[in-house]
Length: 267
Image (cartoon, rainbow, N blue to C red):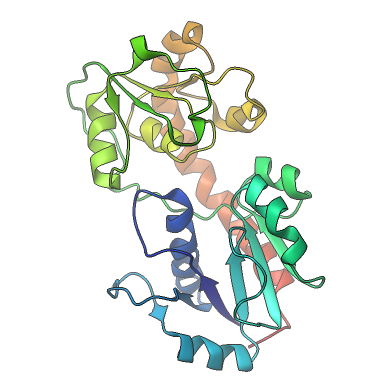
């Protein structure tokens, strides 16, 4: 099988969705299945990722390769016969669904998105570098906060200190290693995981979030209100332990289903 990942952006470390797409290609190659990333504009080659041009991917498509489109992509711009939709968000998937073909396969990034778009199979692609996203044992003081998709949530200025905005992964991990608490208005961001992997407990400032069930799948180090902060501080170390224990195993099972559903078709 050959899989073409249709990227909608150059690779950058301050976007979880972008990292997921590029890492999916890397994971497929790692597991012995040929894959590449296509982005319509030229970009500097990245050793970890097999980035190809339009001529190359069109030739592979003629041979029957699969094209994996993120939910932000409308229609089928590469005119591929074999198409996989990768739902990385509920709103964008539902908005663009009317442009999708009838015989396409859909996978969702996590359980919350899956329920929101039609209970499709889940494929939670690992995209966090655990070698650098960790607790370095630094002295901690003060707090940091993240807004992004939570800009409509009422602000708590008394809790806001260092804002996480347009930071690289390395910058984010440095801030999380020196902060006592990570406050977030955004209830669907990989920063919630990354902060806890760095040993920084997280407090969700969005009341009545519809994602609490999903976030509770591994709640260690996570507070859904300020009254739970002490518990989050006490348990944040357990988050990394469970994450490392469960995440790779779950992904292996999900990838097997992904490969099963796409086998016998295409290259």
